[in-house]
Length: 407
Image (cartoon, rainbow, N blue to C red; front, top):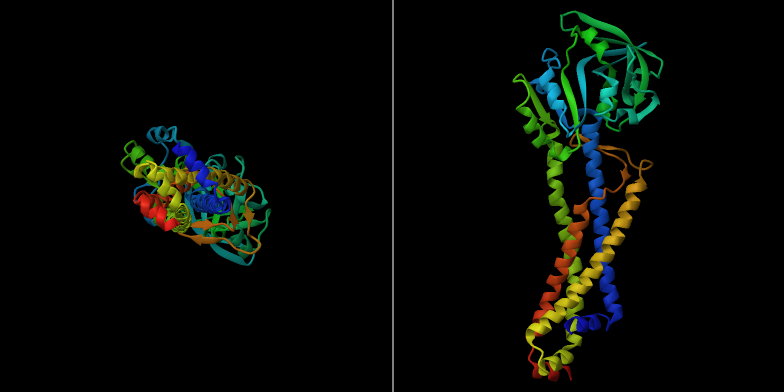
């Protein structure tokens, strides 16, 4: 009976009910969409920092990441290979690094030269997807180079041009050799676009007189947000001379951004639903005021205060559930559109580098369970809290007073 009365009472004033439901649906749908877009921006930033250069984990000699000392090198052995065979690891890339001077005709610029195995590097980073001219390195390329767009512009080179690279070799000699530009990439991060050059690993090992040696192994996992725990797990299986760092240790600012995301999400949810809760509270207070005489009659006929309170709380729960369901459907539909299509803002905005990552000029959503569950559950809780005050007031009314005041 209480359920039937609650349903009837909800639709007694259709306009007010529809307006309240609209506020619930719009607030929850927009919040689901906003959280999805924030997740997309966070994922883009993390991907730009880890999947364009660092990887999710990096194995190197102890202290190498502090000063990039050329002499802190190592070679692959069985223990390292065993670590790289873990199920969570989806790719890894052996690297050798050097810094030196690049020249083309009358133009010169310092640069970071990263010796790689192309087939391995493509499993860790996505620079091959950022090419704007030419092509990526191939397995049989002996002296090719793929460089950033800013560096290519300073050197005034295009695919097919020659570069001269000069650096210090490990034996104290001056290493210099020619490179052929194969491709040019543009990531939107000026740090990479202005300095980074990818070359074949064997070519750089020969130039630096470090045969068979590498400086680091970049690793990609299927659990980037769990990289710190994976690093701790793998660390015990590595030789004592090596260390494994997760992306949070190499990019502490990015780690803080990720950590603050959950707090920011709850702040947004709280602010939006405080406003929505006030609207729901006003609706049910007005409903109780309008039905004062009716509630007094029901209590005079024998309905207990607890039943009055339960009936009004049922009305709140039903409206909250309807708003939750419709809002979730609309929010998921909007998020799907933004995930598949998105909004390209590159015509009016430029990429922004922040905390080691790059915020791209685009809006796209990422659909995650938390981005749907948090707004939905919070909406239901806010609805019940907002309905409790008028329900409690109605339950405390005296039947005679309620009937008399309503006349």
